[in-house]
Length: 270
Image (cartoon, rainbow, N blue to C red; front, side, top):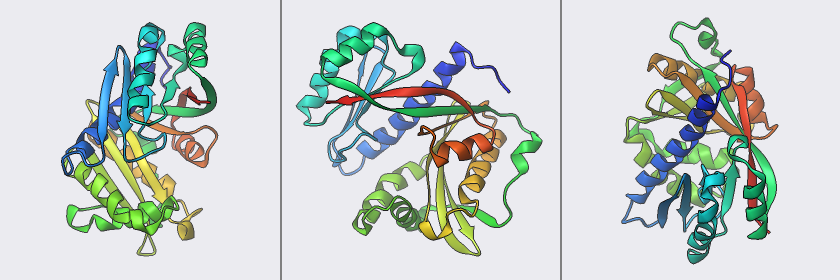
């Protein structure tokens, strides 16, 4: 087990920023930025915004700390000008009483927590070879990428009409060497998907979903194990993941040997 240090906390937080930044920069390239993607840096903080995808997943501020106090009004105005409510994610290492007071004065409140997890990696680690043989794994090719949109929307309970949009916004990622997409099968039937992002020597567990009829069959555990093995094979030093606090996803990552690095404090507008 690797002891959690300030440097390691920075690595974990930066991996979250890198994965989202890489994703949105590539989505921005589709159809002359039809999704309305914009990224802007304010000091240490990075403001992510996707005008045509309302909601907190892509409209969030990461990396904000006490040294960004003078930028908070600008950040709020940045989102207001786009007609989108901002969400701030504050790590314990970046938190301060003054920062929270300032967010509160701007009409924000803490609405929840989000967990960041990590695990050191090394090639030849025997714990990386424990994949469930009942779950078959394969990479999703560009030619067969429609299966990703289908399983993603079914896994997250999204309307079928979103399938083509999800496919297009992820296929552009699959064209990059930084991203790998996996399909999990149970008994030969498509059961779930998992995504891995790699930058420098840190790998991030990105989106993952299992369709309802194949839940509780070890699909997510197998997808984590497969991506962890790939990350180790590529020489990554760390595997990083994020999950809702106390969720099934967090428990699955912990069973695979990931440790809790910290929980983000999530702040939203009243």
